[in-house]
Image 1 (cartoon, rainbow, N blue to C red):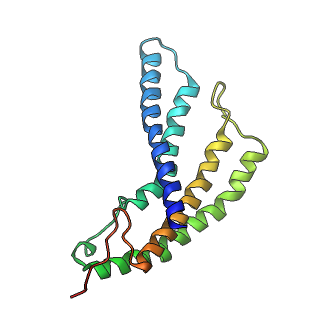
Image 2 (cartoon, rainbow, N blue to C red; image 1 turned 90 degrees about the vertical axis):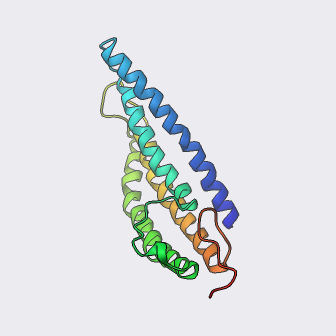
Image 3 (cartoon, rainbow, N blue to C red; image 1 turned 120 degrees about the vertical axis):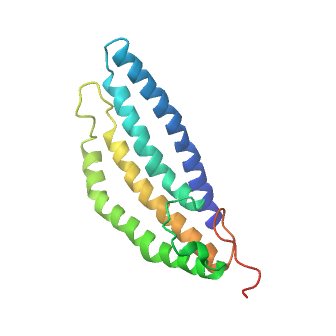
Length: 172
């Protein structure tokens, strides 16, 4: 199960990394269209916003998998590996999983309403797939929750995870 979750999140993370390239190209096109040709394309401007959202929502689980997420480690850096493992485990189970479960729970009605109406852009000429973008919130919550649980299982089993603290051979 751990390997499947990690492979799924790795694929999702690498896939949405292309959103950064698409976002950059769309922004460059938008700037040229607006300032050189005095013509803005709403769908392209919205594509930049979509790309930004997908980059963060779709890449969060992969970033967590690699232990590259934002961490305030005033004390953590000085901890021994065993204590770091315990802190990581508690943080994942007590903070990360409950927060993403709440995000999923609160967002489901919001996403369902968007799907009921197949919500599109409020702008004429905008992207008609707002309901798909809102679905990315659920993908974010589920993928981060699964990754947090997979990493927690690795930490409990003493298995090293990519980027996470490998269990020490022997505690002093």
